Structure formats: structure tokens, C-alpha cells
Length: 330
Ligand SMILES: [Zn+2]
Image (tube, rainbow, N blue to C red; front, top):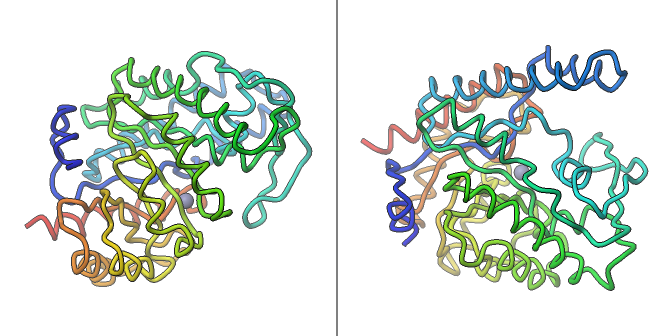
């Protein structure tokens, strides 16, 4: 079904299309430039120049590796929620809180009605897409996750907050579609945090994507999906990009009890380890996927964003994904 949608959009992808979740590590010169910018040692224009240089490096790298659906690598982003909140009227920067691992970020506070400031990601998408003939995904953070990772001092409750944010993210989706973007990923890593709120996440995604002409992917990871499956399949997207390998493919058991009805970007390499999996282990993961899922539903990618790996580790992991997918095409 989703294959048809891809074809209607003019996207001719091979079996087992390869992609990545979104973030890539920043090269050393960009890490340094971001620190220098924060200390006001270099102007914004210089930082942006280096962000473009790093984006171009990653587009070229993905092309060389033979990846089918590219990402811009998010070289201009810090945190995936703060990046949008800092640009949206209605938010105020909050105090430092700890997120996953040892990462700290300023948890945004919603103090007024949230508004779309005009295109946030579109110029980055256009720049990345101008460097390649392969499709580049538009990358957004979903309304439910932005709501969950922010404090709300304005709206009456969490549902009202998520739906207001959905209207804002929808405008960004519309702008990406108008620019020619055909595959849009809307990340919802908070999806499984409060299973009783799954209906809110579904309503918000519906408000974000309904009736818009793109192939939609959502990414979620490291959650207790047994509490939201199969209900999560009602999310208005075409493809779930899921971390599978870090959890030993245990979601496959859920798919056995209730068929997985969407396309899946199946995480075949663990991003939380320096260790590079061997080819056979990755192939076995795809074989296990094929024991339950039809082959034309399966995309191949890493479990999650690669930004915590080194540049070389990230490239090695991507190379493994591509080799495994190609082996199954033949
Ligand atoms: Zn993830």
C-alpha cells in the first residue's frame, strides 16, 4: 500500500530501501565552531558556513555509501525539541534539565500561544536536496514530543498543548511539501512514555499530516512499546522507524501477535555501542524481520540517530546497513 504511495509521489525505491534516522556526528571543526559561537568568538555567518560544509560532507558520504533516502544530518541542531522551541513564538527558554544519559538541555516553557515563525527547516532541506538527486527526508520533531519535553504554563492541559503544537508543525510540513519535499519524518521519541496518552499522540499526528501529499515516517525508540502496540499503528504515518537491535528485536514478538500494518524502517545496527556488528549478525536481523514482515514493507537503517558515534563509526555502521540491504535485494 505504501509502495503505491511512493510511486504516486514519483519515488522509485529499491526493495529494502536504506536510510538513516536523522542525526550524524558533527565533525571536529563544527563542534569547535559551535563552542566558539557560544562564546561570541565567531559570527553566526561563519558558523552557518561550517554547518553547510558539514551538511555537504554528509550528503556526499551518504551518496558514496549508496544510501537510498538521505538526511541532512542535523548539523545545525543541538537538542531536537529546543531547536524548534527556540524558533517558535510562544516559548521561553527554561532552566537546565537532564535528558537521556548525561545530556543537559534547557527545557522550554510555553508561556503564550505557540505560533509558526515561518519556515524553520525548509532552507536546510533545500540546501541538502540541491546537492543530490536522491530524495532527502524533511526532518521535524512531533507535536506530542515537543509538548512532553516542555513545561506548559499557557494551555489548559496536555492535549490542548499537543494540538496547538500540531497546528504549528503542520505549517512546517506544508512548507516542506510546497518546496518539493516528498518524504517527511516526524520524530516522536516520547510516544510510549505515557501509554494512556497514546490517543493524544494519534490526534496530534493526524492534525499534523492529514491530507498532505508526502510519505510520512515517524521515529520512536527505547520505549515500552508493548503498552502501546497495536494501538500505535493508528498514527497517521506510512512508516515507523524503530530501534530494533538494541532491544534484541523483541518487538517482533508483538508483530507476531498482531500484524504490523505499516512500512517499517528496521533498525539493524545498535547506535549505542562503539562495537561494529559483523555482517552475519546484521543479516540475521533482516532474516528475522522477513520471518514476520512482508519484504516490501521493510526499510533498513540504524536503530537511532548516529550523533553520539564518531564520524568514522557512523560511516562504518551505515556501510553495514547498505551491504546487508543489498545482499537481500539479490
Ligand atoms: Zn531514536
